[in-house]
Structure formats: C-alpha cells, structure tokens
Image (cartoon, rainbow, N blue to C red; front, side, top):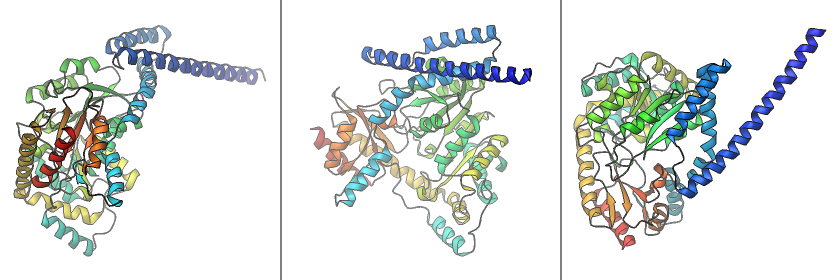
Length: 462
C-alpha cells in the first residue's frame, strides 16, 4: 500500500514539474517575441550566431553538471530556439508570394478571360521526347498498369545509373538509385530519411522554398545563409562554417540555382564539401538544372563522398514535368529508407510511365537542342533587361533571371501584381527568401513571347 501511495506522489510531482516546464517555455516564447520586436526596430537580423554559440556552450556545461545527456540537451535547445523565431518567420511568410500562389492567381484571371504571358512558372515549354510519348502509350495499352517496386522498376533504375555513370564519369550502381514522384518528393523523402525533430538544416538563399518548408514540416530548424547580388550570389564559407552546430544534420545545395542561375565555382564547392565531411553533415544536392549550366559545373557525385544525396528528375532536362519522374542517388541504406517512405506515401510510381521514361535517355540531341534554346533565351532576355532600370546578374545557367529594381523603394510583390494587369506574370522575390525588392522571370517561353513580356515590364517601369 505504501509503495502505491509513493508512486502516486511521484506521479503528481512529475506532473507538476512538467507543467512548470511548459510555463517557463511560454515565458521564454514571450521574451523571444519581445527580442524579435526590438531587433526589427533596430534593423538587426533575426538570428545572432555568436549569441547562440555562447548559449550552446553554457547549456552544454549545464547538462554536464546536471547529468543530462548532452545530445538530448542540444536537441531540446534547438527546438526552443526554433520556436522562438517561428512566429517571426511565419509573419514574413505571410507577406511572400510564391510561384504556386502567383500561378493560382493567374489561372483565376485566365478563367475570367484575361490573356497572360506566363513568365512565372518553372516549366519548360518544350515537347517531351517523341520516343517517350510513344513508349508510354505502348506500355499503357500493353498491360503495364500494375503495382511496381517502391524504389522503381529495375530497367529505369539501371538506365539512370548508367546515364549518371557516363555523364559524370563516376561508377553509380543501380542499388544506389531510387525513382521518386518527381524531384520534389525525392527531396521530401531524402530529408525525411535524415532529419529528426530538433535537428538543423543549412540552406542558402535565395532558393526554392520547398527545402525550408519541408525541413520545418519535419520539425527541423533552418539556418539560412543569405547571399547578395553584389557578391555574385556566392555564399560565404565563413558564414556556413559559423552556422554549423552540434545539431546540424544537413546542408542543402541547389545549383544552377533557382532563382538566380548561379553556379558555384569548383573551388567553393570543394570547400563546402570539406566542411560537410569534417562535421559529418549530409549534403543534399538538388541537380535538376545541371544540364542547363553554361559554365564549368561539378556534380556532388564527382566528389564520391558517402554522406551525400543527389536528387534530380526528368522534368526540366526532358520537359516531362507531368510525368513526375524523379530520382535520387545515395548510400544503399539511405536509398532503402527513401524507398520505404515512398511506399508509405504512395506505394509506387505508375508502371507505364516508368517504362516510357526509360526512353528519355536515348536521345542526347534532344537535350542539346533544348539547352541551346535556353542559352539563346538567356542571352536575349539579358540584353533586353540591361536596357531597363533593373539590376541583375546574367545567369550561369538554369531557366530564370532574378532582377531587382534600381529604386530602393521598389517592391517586388506590388510590381508583380501591377504587371499582371498588363498581362504578364512573374514571381516576386519574397517567394525565395528575404528579397522583397526582386522578382523572378522564367525563361520558359519562345524568344518572341519572352521579348514581348519584357517590353511590358519596361513599360511598367518607365
């Protein structure tokens, strides 16, 4: 009887302590909000790495003193830091207009009868390879309509492995390849396979928002490295190094970059790889635009480091966005985890689409033609935009130009909405990070239509 009473007393005590902890968390959140308001009024950045580094040192010492597991303590601290800035981040996100939001708005206008020049969506206007269309149709009517392996049919995985081995001169076994529902789900599966709640991700902005959104959805914290037009969109190696903590699990690279078209130099990329290896951080490299690179380009695959995941797809290179065929290359254990995640979410990709996708790699002339066409569009658009009151860096590759108004009061959100009234859709820079005075132009239209859209941009700026 006494033991039962003692157990109940202990339960009451632990319940009380738990509630006290949450009271303190609530107090900490309120203090964090106040600090955020003060920082905003002073024009200071949301995150102060030096202050956080010192706090981690103090907490680590306190954990040792109290007999608390250090990894557990660091994980709790990371979640507290994440919660402190979450409301500020959500507030900023409300002000952003992503490409998908803009696309939805454009569709509303088109349904109302307005004609729009689409320079907002990252979808190549080229027709998919004819042999892919033919083979997909043949497979669909030929009975390839059943479930397949979650990792993808062996024929497609083998074809991808062979293609990558030849393209980058690096042996890529089929067992290290998984086919995914587009690169987007490949990224989700990769991050789900690596990240844990309380972990941290280093991301370089401006960038496609799905990386940060996925990390936060998984309970991880995003530490952002902001780059500038003045520095040629090159990330600071020192800033990346200073952002690494005991909780850092992943570093995201995406080059050629969306939206800037930046390609990292081999030297810079090498330094980043060294940092990742030294600190046992997984590199997630999104290489969907790798074929649209017009300067020297080096794939992460060429470094042959085990702690990396390369994600790509057939969407941009082969203009097969609606086919939703992506793929990833990683270690066998990571590939197995990604395949399991895909199995949980959707079981498998459509069999007949995978059969058709195998044929995509058989026509390299198709790729060369599309790449040449995109290079011409970059040249034409850059020449026309140079004549306007804008600042931008001619892209090293990719499918976009990221431009800023010369007027310091230029507002990308307002400009994009005003431009819609002139029948042209672009994506505000706020959709790619803290870049409110920028906007992205997608070059996925023939030069005549692209030129017409840029002329309307000039009309609005004049």
